[in-house]
Amino acid sequence: MIKIPKILENILDELGSIGALPILVGGCVRDHFLNLPIKDYDIELFKIDSLDMVEKSLQKFGNVKQVGKSFGVLILSVDGYDFDFALARTEKKVSQGHKGFEVNINPNMDFKTASLRRDFTINSIGYDYLKKEFLDPNNGIEDLKNGVLKHIKDDTFIEDSLRVYRAVQFCARFNLVLHKNTFNLCKNMVEENLLEELPKERIFEEFKKLFLKSIKPSIGLTLLKDLGVLRYFPELKALDGCIQDKEYHPEGDVWVHTLMTLDEMVKYKTGDEYRDLYLFYALFCHDLGKPFCTETTDEGRVTSHKHESLGVEPTISFLSRLTDEKKFIEKVVPLVKNHLAPFQLYKAESSIKAVKRLSLKCNIEDLCIVCLCDCKGRTIPDKDKCDKAITWVLSQAREMNISNEGLKPLVQGRDLINLGMKPSKEFATILEYALNLQIDENLQKDEILEKIKQEFIK
Image (cartoon, rainbow, N blue to C red; front, side):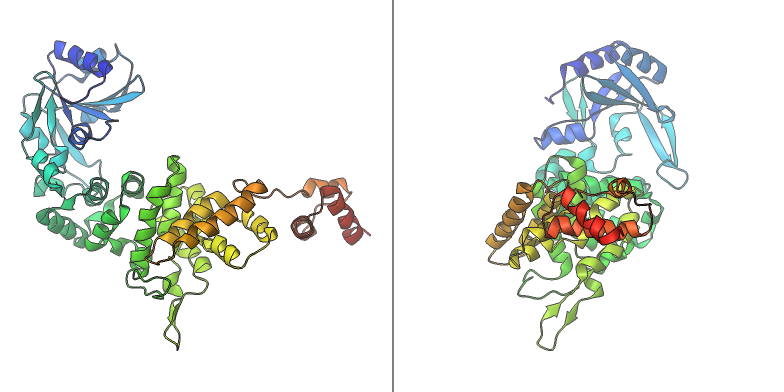
């Protein structure tokens, strides 16, 4: 039997009392067979066509949202859960976009017919709560046992092209192999440009699940490339085949290295989803500058000088294809631009002055995670140096309490005004002069102000 919260049992019993036949569907049933924790419960209701009756029953337990009333969908929030309830229905594509479906409520349809609108067999398994039995009209349980991701029906699958991205993230999350027929269907959808109509927000959400929920993101991203989806992301496509020096990157080209860094990042997740996501994207983008500067020397060595700074523009371009959230992009860019800095500082045996300056450019705690994954995301034999470099930089930054928030300038514009100076373009020069004194000479605020008076006030 599937594990069901007591509050949900009470709700399902209530729905049964008004004549509804509740069947648990989708991820909660799939995750039961995968022995994964169940966080979300979706319930499809048969034998009833009145959403108002359902809503009235649900209101006895908590707050009900009419998220998709035109689709026959309600969400009940109670005891920290969000339970999704939907009337049994069929869907038919009538126009472009993920909302372009004609919905027909049919309380008398059987579960097998209702399951045909779903994407994959593993997501079409049901659990009849009243009879306490599983319903598996499309052999989803067998596919789960065999580690295969298979679509249900060609005609319905192609109605939502986001399913190509869903296939990618499901294979990565559950270590599945995409069935040959499903692979060919997805590839055809890509070649026929069916993915062009997808809103960026929906694609971003699938990448988010891939990064945050996968044990090995490279499985999904390799599939993404094999399906031809990189044609929509020229910044990523350029990484495939971009050579690297064999001494530092014996694993292969930039695409291979990038995927290895993302697999490393899984080990260093912080538990803060927003933070983990921008760290994953920083690694996804960290070498986007290499295709612009990679060269082979006369001695046969491969170089990519200044690829960190050259990666800024393609990073912004790529992320803008996925999100309009500027703050998110602003989190990623400095990590890309400085991703080599911790290792460079360690190798050069830099002073604490350099660490202070680095803290002004980005969050050192974040940067060190990116740098560590970049260093370990390759097949070099001496990976111990990665940990040594990061430990050195972090210990320096933490000792000065600048690893998270960065060095705070002692002198600010208001201090110059207090000295009797009038705001002008020269303020930027003076504040930079003050910051240099703070970093290079380790002067205190009053000492810096005295120097400013001597230098700038006549």
